[in-house]
Image 1 (cartoon, chains in turn blue, red):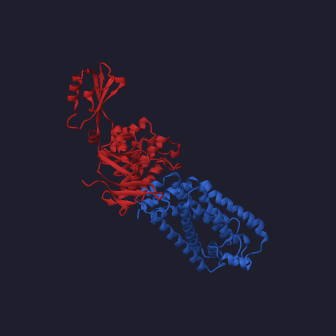
Image 2 (cartoon, helix red, strand yellow):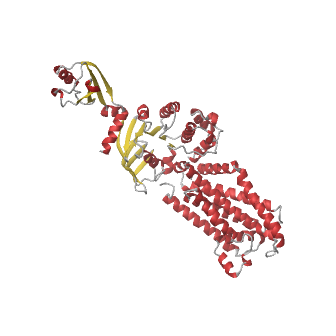
Image 3 (spheres, helix red, strand yellow):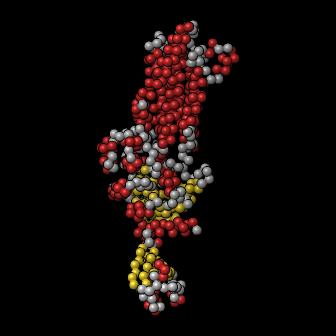
Length: 253
Length: 309
């Protein structure tokens, strides 16, 4: 294992984050604050408590998940797509490193950035609502596992994408709807029975449910199922990345 | 001494069906400068890319420093620095950071003194804190060279290093290449400037249509394939060659004012003595003569034409 290379990639990618701090951090924080103001305060004050939790607090885990998924996918996909686009990928491919180092470097940096922003949003939310986190270790665990697995998804998208349009397609058309329909702003139990069943096919529901459980101890699905879902998704991404590595798909031809 | 790079029966076909390399074999010795000449699309870049790991070969075997590039790719690649043909560079990063990044990527611990030495040698030290996008094209190319040298490679590939580069930078680059060679670095450069190969190389390989047409020491190549071109200015113009001189490979030029004789410098007899005797016999007097050795460019063009025939 070439640890120097992992360090080099990780630092290089983190430097990009800090170089563009305003747009990297401020914009997700600002949009989340807007959600709090609109849904949490303006509309939320007229909504009853959900499962005994004030609506403003109820949406916090969902909002954090929304940003975490979007950020990890976007940052990781852009991170690996950009060298392909400008041609500097030659350096990664000619370096004495395998795909493992490349994945750890890029996915690690993307997950770090996404988790960092998630924590900033969590801190920001305490300005608007009263929060008490029941299972902080689980909360951090879900945050990390989700950040890492969706950064892997983003990495795969970045390798797959042939242009910027394809790069933005998945986060825009898949991630955002899945988060909105995955119970970010409501509990699945509030839906009519038919739609509740449909929602169960949405993998993001399991993430948000598990994450919300770590805050309030209430969940749409048992927390074990949520954990299994995240780990399963992580494994699927790992296997796919392993296949890319062996085949050189869209990289070495 | 074992060759630093050994390529055996290398073949590459792309998914599109293009055959870029056909059964290429060559050995590159430690410390030499090898120039790969060939027209655009000949397969030069594919050959380099295969050795550096950018392209997976379809067949054949490559070793670098004795390490198979497919099996011991870490050891093999650690020895190689690559300067690509296109200027591909992260636009928003500072010069010094992008060079440090390359060093780390190749598994070397940070060494600011060495990086400073490389940047100074390439006249980039003053620009070390500039973002690369602020640099001119020639400066960007220097940054690419600095990146390739950042991990102290034993073999340096320069793919069309002086394409679109001004004369000063070209001279600087040649100087740098010689200094690197003096330090024992093996250098492989591709070019379609014959002048560059003639100026720099110890050995020259000619590639066309995916085949290595020849690989030879430069001086031997010039001798072996070099032809001389003898131009005789005549005192009085000729309308046609006299019958006695037919079949000697002579031709008339300048409206009959000159006789041209092409001959091979390597042939046992140049035939000049008997030619002069024959000219005297035919009553043709010569006012002046000059002879010229063919350049590598002519050698190269002839090889490529023969390869296509």
